[in-house]
Structure formats: structure tokens, C-alpha cells
Length: 286
Image 1 (cartoon, rainbow, N blue to C red):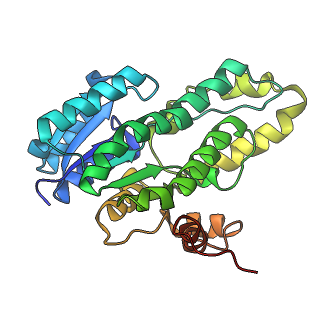
Image 2: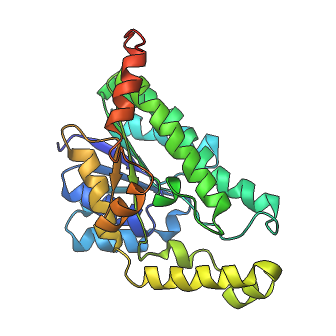
């Protein structure tokens, strides 16, 4: 596996950082991308501590900038001669409800969490076809079950899940495996990066204040029992290395139980068997 190259987005912290180090330890050449490479210190320190510095290369990539995506992928393929896997991990949270949200914030959530994934996927697929590679996308349990005060974020993650679920049989027809990884609460800088002034948010919530307070209290409690980024990233590494990865992978027992309230077809195999039949030309039944 030492000649295999994986590009991972959003690696300055959290799951992306842990996935970059974990993939390097698993034998991959890792192109760890982030919007601002000046924030690479934590990743480089973790790679050094794991003894994999030589396998981790930091590059700039802004998933909301098409030129940045195209330039980064072209540089990776020119340097390494191939691209065997992509992990779409970059994302941004957003807390708010539609009546009070600014539409620019809603659009921003979609740009980063959905259109950024589409942009990277679209640019990567020709290279993944060439290597019969693998596409892994970190979504969320919020891409399966909508959660209060997360309308914009969950809408984006629902969109990613629908996009990827639709892509699976098409990509498989040209030799590319597609999986989504669904974490629950993860103790990372993702939540801190929201920069929310909770008292101010509640004070501005008006009629929604009691519901918002209850939601925040419950969320703070759940993040007190959150997975570590490394625990969540282990599922990403499994998706990269398994012989036949499932489409849908939850990162913990809690995430599996939570999504099971909606997903009787927990790993996506029944839906994918049906969709594969559609693209393989099988006759309609019934």
C-alpha cells in the first residue's frame, strides 16, 4: 500500500487531523489539505509523534473555491502520479432556526458542507476512476435525523447523504467505491469553532428561548460523553482499507442506535442492491 495516495480535506483539527495521521500509519501517502496551511502545526506535531511525518504532506485547498480544488488535485496527481482515495471531511457547523437566521448564513452552511463536497468529488472522480479508487465522505448522524436548531447544517448533510447514496451504483460501475461515515458527538474544535455566545443567542431567541435552552443543555451533556476524534476517525480508516466497505458506516454504538431509529437498512445494502439493479438493466418486478 506504500504507493497509494489519499487526499483528505479539513485536516487542521478534529476528525480530519486524526484521519490523516491514521491513514499514514496504515501505510498511505497522505495529502492533508486545509483552507489555511498556517494552521497545520497541530497536524504536523501529531504526525511527528506518530512517526509518520514523511508520509504526510500539507497542501492548501478551500472546498468553496473551484480553482483551489482543481489546482490542488492537479498538483497531487502531477507529483504522485495517481490518486487512490479522497476523504471529504471539511465542514462547518451552524446553530440557529430559520425564522431568525440570516439567509447568508444558511447559504454558507450549504456552500461548505454540501457544494464543497460536490466540488471535490466532481474533480476527483476522473482520477479515482483511473485507479479504481475509493471516495469516503464524513457526514453526520445529522444527515440521517434532523435535529433542532440545526436546520441549515442538517439540510446540508441530508443533501450530502442523498448525493452520495445516488452516486454509489454509478461510481461502482466504473470501479470506484463510495462510503459515508456518520459520527455522533465528537470532542473536537468543530463545536468550539462555531464561536457562539450562548447567553446572547438565547437572549435573542425570543419565543424560541425555552426550546433553545433545553436543546443547548442536552447538547452540552452529550458532548461531555463524546467520542475522541481518533475514535471517530477509525471508521474513516476502516472505509479506506476494508476489502468491501459498506456504504453507510456509523462511528459508535450510540450513532448506530440513533440512526437505527430511522434506518432499518442500517448499512445501506438493501437500497444499494435495488439501485445496482437499476443500473445493471434488470427488469422491473411486481
